[in-house]
Length: 115
Length: 112
Image (cartoon, rainbow over all chains, first blue to last red; front, side, top):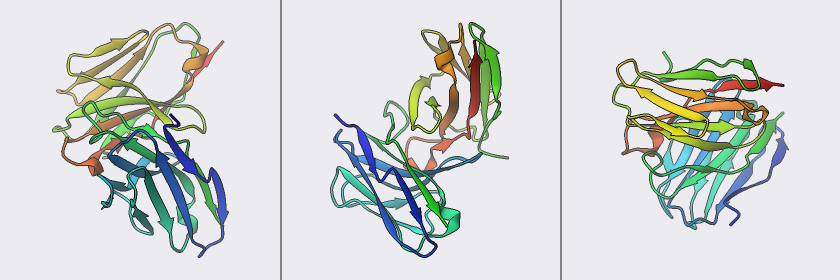
């Protein structure tokens, strides 16, 4: 079991460029999440999915889009990157709704810098 | 007021010491609580859930104080390997994934 994997691990973009971050999990989890982590801010939820074909907005969804075409994959897209999107992005998954007895498992993160 | 607040630290304690830190939350209806550990430049990992009756896992003890709206983490006989950032996580209710709140973390450094 690889758990939760993320690609790429690092990326540098110029303002206005686009990119897609890929998250994959092999635990057959229904729920998947995208967070960003900034210094002093804690993790903030961008978007999440409660199952294949579904997506929902989190706390900070602006500037991002997501897709969950396959249960094991959750993609995060930046259509036109801005310096404010410089951050560390974590993907997570859980069997059921996180909380209670459903643990969130995190991927190793993607460090994105937008110049 | 932030929904979940933690003292950022750093807490710098000698090996073998006991250290404790708290996390306060603002939503009195919060349902579930967790401590995650995050090593430098790594992903968060669940350390332990926090139950109403308190719970212990080896050297780690977590407690919930609903009246004062905080959770605590106590580490006994601290090891160098305990050096990390400890994130408090609060889920205000079971029904929505979007409501899970992460604290910004308390940094702990254990010195030899």
